Amino acid sequence: MTYSIVARDPVSGQLGVAVQSCWPMVGAVVTWAEPGVGAVATQSFTETGYGPRALDLLRAGSSAPDALAALIAADPGEAVRQVAIVDRLGSTGTHTGAGCIAEAGHLTADGVSVQANMMERPTVWPAMLEAWKATDGDLADRFMAVLRAAEAAGGDVRGRQSAAILVVGGETTERPWDRLLRLHRGFEAMDEGEQLAMAGKLEAAAAAFERADELAPADDQVGLTWVIARFASGRGDDARDDARRIVRANPRWPLWLRRMADRDMLPGGHEVADWLDQLD
Image: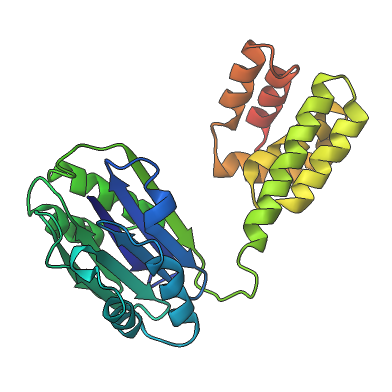
Protein backbone atom coordinates (compact mmCIF):
# COMPACT_ATOMS: atom_id res chain seq x y z
CA MET A 1 0.00 0.00 0.00
CA THR A 2 3.01 2.19 -0.67
CA TYR A 3 5.59 3.34 -3.20
CA SER A 4 9.29 3.64 -2.46
CA ILE A 5 12.81 3.83 -3.83
CA VAL A 6 16.14 2.47 -2.59
CA ALA A 7 19.33 3.73 -4.18
CA ARG A 8 23.06 4.31 -3.98
CA ASP A 9 24.50 7.62 -5.16
CA PRO A 10 27.33 6.69 -7.57
CA VAL A 11 29.21 9.92 -6.83
CA SER A 12 29.09 10.21 -3.03
CA GLY A 13 28.43 6.57 -2.21
CA GLN A 14 25.48 7.62 -0.05
CA LEU A 15 22.74 5.06 0.46
CA GLY A 16 19.10 5.78 1.07
CA VAL A 17 15.43 5.02 0.88
CA ALA A 18 12.38 7.21 0.32
CA VAL A 19 8.71 6.32 0.68
CA GLN A 20 5.23 7.79 0.47
CA SER A 21 1.92 6.20 1.45
CA CYS A 22 -1.57 6.72 2.80
CA TRP A 23 -0.40 4.79 5.88
CA PRO A 24 0.48 7.09 8.82
CA MET A 25 4.09 7.36 10.03
CA VAL A 26 5.24 5.21 7.12
CA GLY A 27 8.92 5.96 7.67
CA ALA A 28 8.89 4.16 11.01
CA VAL A 29 8.16 0.80 9.39
CA VAL A 30 9.35 0.94 5.77
CA THR A 31 12.74 2.70 5.79
CA TRP A 32 15.97 1.09 6.98
CA ALA A 33 19.59 2.06 6.23
CA GLU A 34 23.08 1.86 7.70
CA PRO A 35 26.17 3.81 6.57
CA GLY A 36 28.44 1.80 4.32
CA VAL A 37 26.13 -1.21 4.50
CA GLY A 38 22.89 -0.71 2.57
CA ALA A 39 19.30 0.48 2.50
CA VAL A 40 16.02 -1.43 2.67
CA ALA A 41 12.36 -0.73 1.94
CA THR A 42 9.91 -3.25 3.35
CA GLN A 43 6.22 -2.73 2.52
CA SER A 44 2.90 -4.37 1.57
CA PHE A 45 1.54 -6.09 4.71
CA THR A 46 4.86 -4.99 6.11
CA GLU A 47 7.17 -7.39 7.88
CA THR A 48 9.44 -4.90 9.65
CA GLY A 49 11.91 -7.65 10.46
CA TYR A 50 13.11 -7.55 6.87
CA GLY A 51 14.82 -4.24 7.63
CA PRO A 52 17.20 -5.19 10.45
CA ARG A 53 17.68 -8.75 9.19
CA ALA A 54 18.64 -7.54 5.72
CA LEU A 55 21.16 -5.09 7.17
CA ASP A 56 22.61 -7.88 9.33
CA LEU A 57 23.12 -10.04 6.23
CA LEU A 58 24.67 -7.18 4.24
CA ARG A 59 26.97 -6.32 7.11
CA ALA A 60 28.10 -9.96 7.22
CA GLY A 61 29.05 -9.85 3.53
CA SER A 62 25.95 -10.90 1.60
CA SER A 63 25.03 -9.05 -1.57
CA ALA A 64 21.60 -7.45 -1.85
CA PRO A 65 20.21 -10.24 -4.10
CA ASP A 66 21.54 -12.97 -1.79
CA ALA A 67 20.22 -11.26 1.33
CA LEU A 68 16.80 -10.89 -0.23
CA ALA A 69 16.72 -14.52 -1.37
CA ALA A 70 17.50 -15.71 2.16
CA LEU A 71 14.76 -13.55 3.68
CA ILE A 72 12.14 -14.57 1.14
CA ALA A 73 12.94 -18.26 1.59
CA ALA A 74 12.33 -17.97 5.34
CA ASP A 75 9.05 -16.02 5.07
CA PRO A 76 5.77 -17.98 4.75
CA GLY A 77 4.04 -14.69 3.96
CA GLU A 78 6.31 -13.72 1.07
CA ALA A 79 3.40 -13.68 -1.40
CA VAL A 80 2.07 -10.43 0.10
CA ARG A 81 5.44 -8.76 0.73
CA GLN A 82 7.19 -6.15 -1.34
CA VAL A 83 10.84 -5.64 -0.40
CA ALA A 84 13.79 -3.86 -2.00
CA ILE A 85 17.45 -3.81 -0.94
CA VAL A 86 20.50 -1.94 -2.23
CA ASP A 87 23.96 -2.72 -0.92
CA ARG A 88 27.09 -0.60 -0.57
CA LEU A 89 28.28 -1.58 -4.06
CA GLY A 90 24.99 -0.67 -5.72
CA SER A 91 23.65 -4.18 -6.27
CA THR A 92 19.89 -4.45 -5.81
CA GLY A 93 17.41 -7.14 -4.93
CA THR A 94 13.66 -6.62 -5.21
CA HIS A 95 10.64 -8.83 -4.55
CA THR A 96 7.01 -8.15 -5.39
CA GLY A 97 4.94 -11.06 -4.09
CA ALA A 98 2.25 -12.58 -6.26
CA GLY A 99 -0.36 -11.64 -3.66
CA CYS A 100 0.43 -7.91 -3.57
CA ILE A 101 -2.64 -5.78 -4.30
CA ALA A 102 -2.88 -4.25 -7.77
CA GLU A 103 -1.51 -2.20 -9.20
CA ALA A 104 1.85 -3.54 -8.02
CA GLY A 105 5.29 -3.93 -9.52
CA HIS A 106 8.91 -2.86 -9.51
CA LEU A 107 11.77 -1.85 -11.78
CA THR A 108 15.51 -1.86 -11.20
CA ALA A 109 18.52 -0.18 -12.80
CA ASP A 110 22.14 0.32 -11.84
CA GLY A 111 22.18 1.14 -8.13
CA VAL A 112 18.44 1.76 -7.80
CA SER A 113 15.12 -0.02 -7.35
CA VAL A 114 11.62 1.50 -7.43
CA GLN A 115 8.57 -0.42 -6.23
CA ALA A 116 4.90 0.20 -5.58
CA ASN A 117 1.71 -1.59 -4.66
CA MET A 118 -1.96 -0.62 -4.40
CA MET A 119 -1.37 2.16 -6.91
CA GLU A 120 -4.05 3.88 -8.94
CA ARG A 121 -2.29 3.01 -12.20
CA PRO A 122 0.57 0.75 -13.34
CA THR A 123 2.41 3.83 -14.61
CA VAL A 124 3.64 4.79 -11.15
CA TRP A 125 6.86 2.81 -10.85
CA PRO A 126 7.95 3.45 -14.48
CA ALA A 127 7.46 7.17 -13.82
CA MET A 128 9.58 6.86 -10.68
CA LEU A 129 12.49 5.27 -12.51
CA GLU A 130 12.27 7.83 -15.32
CA ALA A 131 12.40 10.66 -12.78
CA TRP A 132 15.43 9.09 -11.09
CA LYS A 133 17.31 8.91 -14.37
CA ALA A 134 16.30 12.43 -15.44
CA THR A 135 17.19 14.23 -12.18
CA ASP A 136 20.57 15.59 -11.11
CA GLY A 137 21.62 16.54 -7.61
CA ASP A 138 22.29 14.70 -4.40
CA LEU A 139 20.39 11.66 -3.22
CA ALA A 140 17.74 13.58 -1.27
CA ASP A 141 17.00 15.86 -4.24
CA ARG A 142 16.61 12.93 -6.58
CA PHE A 143 14.37 11.15 -4.08
CA MET A 144 12.08 14.17 -3.93
CA ALA A 145 11.79 14.18 -7.71
CA VAL A 146 10.92 10.48 -7.67
CA LEU A 147 8.19 10.91 -5.03
CA ARG A 148 6.67 13.81 -6.94
CA ALA A 149 6.70 11.80 -10.17
CA ALA A 150 4.94 8.89 -8.47
CA GLU A 151 2.22 11.16 -7.16
CA ALA A 152 1.77 12.79 -10.57
CA ALA A 153 1.38 9.35 -12.13
CA GLY A 154 -1.48 8.42 -9.79
CA GLY A 155 0.17 7.45 -6.52
CA ASP A 156 -1.50 5.38 -3.81
CA VAL A 157 -5.10 4.66 -4.81
CA ARG A 158 -6.20 5.62 -1.28
CA GLY A 159 -4.46 9.01 -1.35
CA ARG A 160 -1.48 10.23 0.64
CA GLN A 161 -0.83 10.76 4.33
CA SER A 162 2.86 10.41 5.17
CA ALA A 163 6.30 10.24 3.62
CA ALA A 164 9.91 9.79 4.68
CA ILE A 165 13.43 10.11 3.29
CA LEU A 166 16.39 8.40 4.95
CA VAL A 167 19.94 9.00 3.63
CA VAL A 168 23.14 7.66 5.19
CA GLY A 169 26.82 7.91 4.32
CA GLY A 170 28.70 5.53 2.09
CA GLU A 171 31.43 4.78 4.62
CA THR A 172 31.04 2.09 7.24
CA THR A 173 31.24 3.14 10.88
CA GLU A 174 31.32 0.96 13.96
CA ARG A 175 28.98 3.38 15.71
CA PRO A 176 26.47 4.72 13.14
CA TRP A 177 24.25 6.12 15.88
CA ASP A 178 26.90 8.49 17.28
CA ARG A 179 26.30 11.29 14.76
CA LEU A 180 22.57 11.43 15.48
CA LEU A 181 23.16 11.21 19.23
CA ARG A 182 25.61 14.12 19.13
CA LEU A 183 23.18 16.13 16.99
CA HIS A 184 20.39 15.45 19.49
CA ARG A 185 22.59 16.54 22.38
CA GLY A 186 23.60 19.63 20.44
CA PHE A 187 19.98 20.65 20.01
CA GLU A 188 19.35 19.96 23.69
CA ALA A 189 22.18 22.33 24.58
CA MET A 190 20.83 24.91 22.13
CA ASP A 191 17.40 24.68 23.73
CA GLU A 192 19.00 25.07 27.17
CA GLY A 193 20.78 28.19 25.94
CA GLU A 194 17.55 29.68 24.61
CA GLN A 195 15.83 29.10 27.95
CA LEU A 196 18.71 30.70 29.84
CA ALA A 197 18.74 33.69 27.48
CA MET A 198 15.00 34.22 27.98
CA ALA A 199 15.63 34.20 31.74
CA GLY A 200 18.29 36.89 31.36
CA LYS A 201 21.19 34.57 32.21
CA LEU A 202 23.25 35.61 29.23
CA GLU A 203 26.65 34.30 30.33
CA ALA A 204 25.26 30.84 31.04
CA ALA A 205 23.30 30.97 27.78
CA ALA A 206 26.46 31.73 25.80
CA ALA A 207 28.21 28.76 27.40
CA ALA A 208 25.30 26.50 26.42
CA PHE A 209 25.36 27.78 22.83
CA GLU A 210 29.10 27.20 22.61
CA ARG A 211 28.64 23.64 23.90
CA ALA A 212 25.86 23.07 21.34
CA ASP A 213 28.19 24.16 18.53
CA GLU A 214 30.90 21.79 19.76
CA LEU A 215 28.43 18.91 19.75
CA ALA A 216 26.87 19.68 16.35
CA PRO A 217 29.41 21.74 14.40
CA ALA A 218 27.89 20.84 11.01
CA ASP A 219 24.42 22.14 11.85
CA ASP A 220 23.92 25.74 10.75
CA GLN A 221 20.94 26.38 13.03
CA VAL A 222 23.05 25.44 16.04
CA GLY A 223 25.96 27.45 14.67
CA LEU A 224 23.79 30.51 14.17
CA THR A 225 22.78 30.59 17.85
CA TRP A 226 26.45 30.61 18.81
CA VAL A 227 27.06 33.45 16.32
CA ILE A 228 24.17 35.44 17.85
CA ALA A 229 25.49 34.87 21.37
CA ARG A 230 28.95 36.15 20.43
CA PHE A 231 27.52 39.16 18.59
CA ALA A 232 25.34 40.04 21.58
CA SER A 233 28.35 39.94 23.91
CA GLY A 234 30.43 42.23 21.69
CA ARG A 235 32.45 39.40 20.12
CA GLY A 236 31.07 39.75 16.60
CA ASP A 237 34.56 39.81 15.07
CA ASP A 238 35.22 36.35 16.51
CA ALA A 239 32.03 35.07 14.88
CA ARG A 240 32.47 36.72 11.48
CA ASP A 241 33.86 33.70 9.59
CA ASP A 242 31.19 31.37 11.00
CA ALA A 243 28.50 33.91 10.17
CA ARG A 244 29.66 34.19 6.55
CA ARG A 245 29.65 30.42 6.12
CA ILE A 246 26.18 30.01 7.62
CA VAL A 247 24.57 32.80 5.57
CA ARG A 248 26.20 31.58 2.36
CA ALA A 249 24.70 28.15 3.00
CA ASN A 250 21.24 29.67 3.60
CA PRO A 251 20.77 33.36 2.76
CA ARG A 252 17.33 33.32 4.42
CA TRP A 253 18.67 33.26 7.97
CA PRO A 254 18.50 37.09 8.34
CA LEU A 255 14.84 36.97 7.30
CA TRP A 256 14.18 34.35 9.99
CA LEU A 257 15.93 36.51 12.61
CA ARG A 258 13.77 39.53 11.72
CA ARG A 259 10.57 37.51 11.87
CA MET A 260 11.51 36.14 15.28
CA ALA A 261 12.30 39.64 16.48
CA ASP A 262 8.96 40.92 15.14
CA ARG A 263 7.25 38.52 17.57
CA ASP A 264 9.48 39.57 20.49
CA MET A 265 11.00 36.09 20.52
CA LEU A 266 14.56 37.20 19.72
CA PRO A 267 15.60 40.52 21.23
CA GLY A 268 18.26 42.12 19.07
CA GLY A 269 17.33 39.96 16.10
CA HIS A 270 17.06 42.92 13.74
CA GLU A 271 20.53 44.14 14.71
CA VAL A 272 22.06 40.70 14.10
CA ALA A 273 20.22 40.41 10.78
CA ASP A 274 21.52 43.82 9.68
CA TRP A 275 25.04 42.77 10.59
CA LEU A 276 24.70 39.52 8.65
CA ASP A 277 23.42 41.39 5.59
CA GLN A 278 26.51 43.62 5.65
CA LEU A 279 28.97 40.73 5.59
CA ASP A 280 30.77 40.34 2.27
